[in-house]
Amino acid sequence: MDHEQAGMPPGKAVLFLFPVAAYVALFIVLHSLLGIETVWFGLLLLWYWGMEKQAGLEPLLKIIFPGAIAGVGLVYALIILPELLGTPGTVAAFILIAGAVVCTFTGHAGMFVNGATFLCVAVIMIPAISKTNADFLDFAKTIALSCAYMGLSAWGMERLGKARAESAEL
Image (cartoon, rainbow, N blue to C red):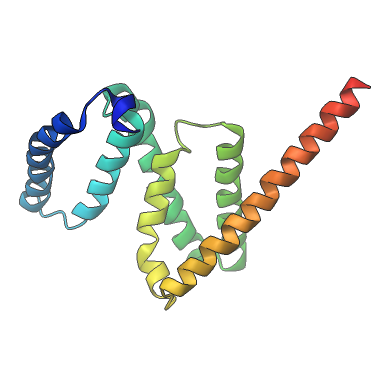
C-alpha cells in the first residue's frame, strides 16, 4: 500500500514512526520478560497483520490466529509424520501440503489456510531448510525456477480458460 492509498503524507508517516517504534519495542520487551526467544517470528506475524489486515481485531481473530495455529500444526505434521510413519508419513505430509495448496487456489478453508498459515510454515521450516547448505545463489536459482514454473502455469491456465470460454460460445 503506498502513502496515497493510505491517505498519509510522507511527513506524517515519519511522525507515525515513533509511536510504532514504541509499540514494537514493547512487543520485544514482552517477549523478553516472558522468556520467549522467537521474537523475530512474532515480529513477522505482527508485520503481516499490519500490512495485510490493517491491524484489525476481526481479521486477527478470524484469519491471523487460526491461520497461524494451522501453520504450526501443518509444520508439526510435516516433521513428525515422516519420523513416526516412514514412507506413509511422508506421503501423508505431501498430501497435507497439496491440500493446503488446493485450499489456497480455490479459496476454501480461508480461516485456516491463508497468508498467516504460509508465513508460519515458511518461518518454522527455516531450521530444517538451513541444514540443506543452501546459499544465496541457490535461493536466486529457486526464485527464477519457481517464477518460471508459476508463470508457465498461469499462462497455461489462462490459455485453457480462453479455450473453454471460446468452446462454450459455440
